[in-house]
Image 1 (spheres, helix red, strand yellow):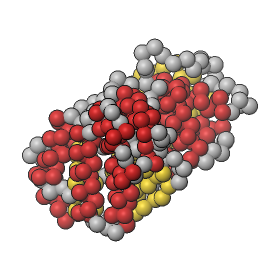
Image 2 (cartoon, helix red, strand yellow):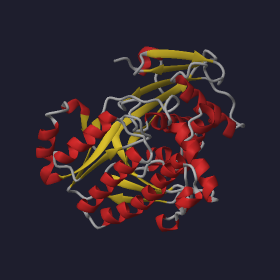
Image 3 (spheres, helix red, strand yellow):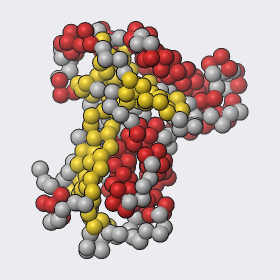
Image 4 (cartoon, helix red, strand yellow):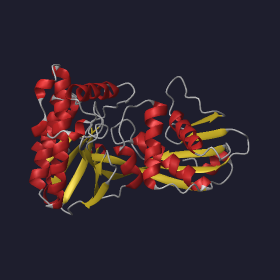
Length: 356
């Protein structure tokens, strides 16, 4: 593998990393002002930076084995990977107009599978912004870095998402659930029980948020908020939900998923604190059914993984992430893990199964 010095013929000045995440429960509740419950994964993206003396930005991606050079922050016409770096630089300099435009060498390495619903793009943005924060000594708090990273993805890249991915990537800790109120940005880090094992299974269905129905779902939920006369669906409890106010069946289904999912997150937090694995698993199963039927964000391959995981001994299983492919997450009691893995290996190779 090539190193920073191999590519740029100099040593890097700073290096920072950000991790991918798995959302244990709470899909599409972040940008609707609700609650989410993700946790960090061991997969991470690392950014190394030094000053460039050639009056241009030089960015190398280890994953793509490609170097991109540029002098401005105009987004490419073909949605290139380098746009995320350009977006971070644009947002950072816009926030720090007193800092002169300083050309940089940027080296990207990552162990995060791309396009699988575990926030590879958010981890990249958070890692770049952490490295810029370190290089320029701007002393931003982790929460502010998350806010800037969301701005990159939402305003520069054009993905209509919430703040969950950026917050957990910037602040989260491995083996702790990250309970987040996406409206107030208040959060709690909660220890996961020692005998709970969460596992990812890769469906190998790659997705691209810009090309998927993600932005369409976002628009549908905004319509639902209009029907219900609320700024955020997350403020509506299931017992307050008047389905008669929505005369569009499709919009009704989308709203029902978010409102019930939000309630499931609050219950899930209680079950972690009470170490109630059975009840937490049941919520995961209900969440997947809602995600598949009401939100229509699952696929046949994903549904098969979920069912096989439960048959193999998981307490619960569900699609995780933005939907339309990617990873499933399963909850297994530690005592049952070996049997679960043995059963799952009948269908899936170990290279597609990852312990959280």
